[in-house]
Image (tube, rainbow, N blue to C red; front, top):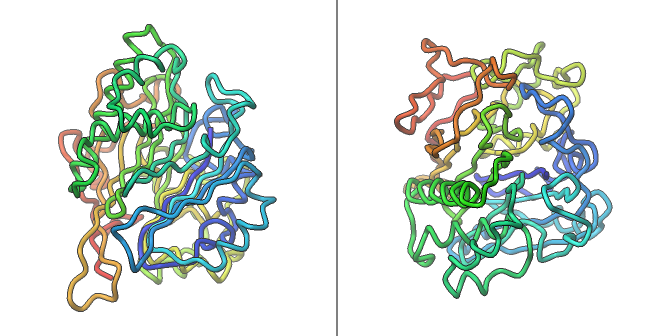
Length: 386
């Protein structure tokens, strides 16, 4: 498994997510496992050490229609001078960052460690990354590749299930030069998951797969938290969306908790006491300039982090800037269930981490349609013009 972070908002230094927070992505690469609200006591789907390479993809604030710039390396993120130097000098309004763990992934071995297999993956305007594994991939790989058009077949340079999932997604998108709406991108992601799970069924694969994907076209973002096994929860995935003052409010919290409406009525810190916020670094207000989606909270003050519900996707929709905006456009954030056969929300009586929804809790949303969560929720997300 792996760890990854997505940021969209006003331009920030990449170091604001990779190095500066107390539980930054680089810290997660060597000391992961902070998964408040998740029930994965043996870290089966949330690997603690992710040292088999890293990757960055970022978009230009001045050339938003161009493809992302990509930097990947097979060394551990915590021990790479070039990474540490680059992120202190590059700003971006849209960042994908990933640290990789080959050990523990289905069918993987040390020979899979190469730059071609390192996330993120970029094709034209699209950037993609994955945390998880596709069970039985070796059985279905040949059939999957045979279904791809020539251009996407030729795009494949590595051997991972993740890159092949990206190719399937691009095939579902079709015309990769056409600008999609947010819901068209989300629908394509859902069709990709359907196609993968049907191929698994065709090839007799019964073991569950972890399908935490993130994709962007440079405007919209879709990220999934998904596992096609109702007896097991997917890998963790959180989001943070707040006003510029949100971090100051967070630092005053005396009993930080993941929003109880997210997934579990459990203490926010699965492995120790919750930091009240006093150790937050001065650079963290950068997170308040947009939305951050991360495998693990980047701060120990988890009161402003919400856990994405199991088998749901979070959609960050680009809103064109108004005449009085500061640039960068705005964001509308919504969450919707993943409608895929044989993918159901895990139930608490089966030992997973998802509690039964409270019908009186406004933060719960119907399974039939996407829902924009109210800004009055404990971890607010709403349309915001910048």
